[in-house]
Length: 206
Image 1 (cartoon, helix red, strand yellow):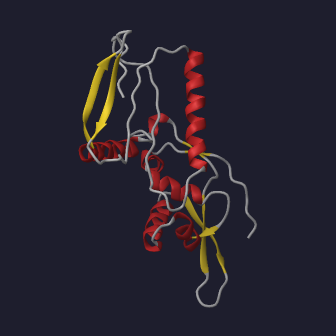
Image 2 (cartoon, one colour):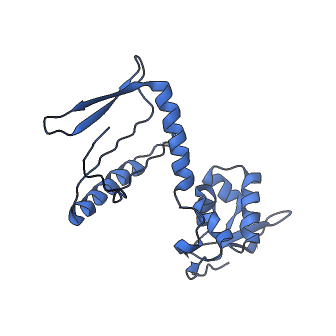
Image 3 (cartoon, one colour):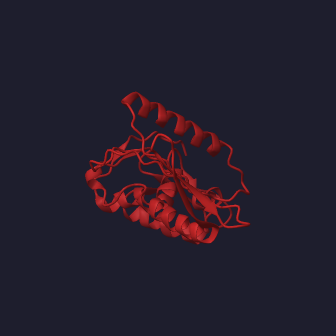
């Protein structure tokens, strides 16, 4: 079967948008873009149980995000081939019931709290000579730490903010490329946004 390039599709139905805010479902759907693939190939590539993957494929078919586009001949029953209905999707903000990173953010907060209670003895605060406050996590004796969190409150120009974003992306991309198959999976989040309150003090804590 010859693959056909599909156009971008806009998603305005909130029911469909939930697929894209769920990291696991989004990953499954996007793996089936660009060409016709079987469920078995998807299960192997995504590291998923085949029965569980079939459940997600069935839901995406019912939502109109995935199509059965052909078969691959073999002795016995032919293998079904699936493809996403577009190669890229645009989801306007008004279609979203929650943010794209909300599920991951919740998981990260829970994991950080659990690791903090297990590995750290507390936080040590001190004032610098310029009046800024520094906080340092003090780990319990014998604990190496399986997680960390760093906060900074910065005064930045638009140029500085752009430079910070580029450098953070470069660091994250560097370690993403370095990922090893047998390594432990970590959630890593970096973000910056204007403060919503009128607090003027710059209080930097670790």
